[in-house]
Length: 393
Image (tube, rainbow, N blue to C red):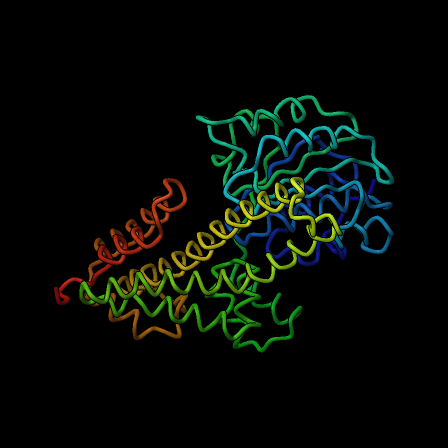
């Protein structure tokens, strides 16, 4: 059997992942295949894209991910009947959904070689203290049917329940390099080299974020507002204002996404119930509507946290730039366009103080994501900790 190569349409959009691609191509061709895989890597490294490419290659008639056969076309479009995608827009995955998934995964493939289940957010399967959702999957992953393959995605191995990760083959994705991302943008999105270079640096290797920055002016404007905050944190009043602005920015961006999604979901629910929804006494419609509204609130909360999380990582990039500037490190800064602001921060705080500021950002992140602290409170505490030494009280 010949050695697979990475030159195949299914794999073309995977940036900076050549070693991983080669492993997966060998597995798709029949060497090193196993029933459960765990793809880990930082946000934007392309975990779900790798899972999609691998799932498509496993169903490919040529076993390569040729991109030309019917199986590849269905896989790439996300409509292959034997590839099930599990995506969570809430903070957790639910036990009942996982039990239904286990039953579906046990079915024999309809048209493909495998019955493949992709779980994009395996880190939301529970914690060691509350593993119920993960336990619902455990036996299915431990003793799968012969034609079932599980593909799990998570930021790190530690984010997945030990009982789950121990039964998977783990592949850790690399953070794509700035030059790789820039070349991808100029090739696939036809943006100028200047814009591609900016987006690649500002995204810090996050492909989806890089594309948004390269293609959308509003996204660039929102980021510019965030990364300009550190140099302005000179008084308690400016800290409170910055915290409010961060919360408002997240709310505005989330509402723009949520309004359209909620309108579509309500229309789909109404179409399912048809004329029954006009009957105000219809208990089934009322129950379904109540369930939808509850789910939409959970999704909206998660989206706000995701937007804030991205803003926090943009803030971290400014303080890392300031440390690099203080140390005289060569090369462009992540926020090269704001070098003047970065210099203000670097002059005001020592490298040790800058490291403590980065810690303060990650503390705020943990408070919101892990301990459900209201974003406004967490952000106020964070911005106070980020106030530049020597500023006004």
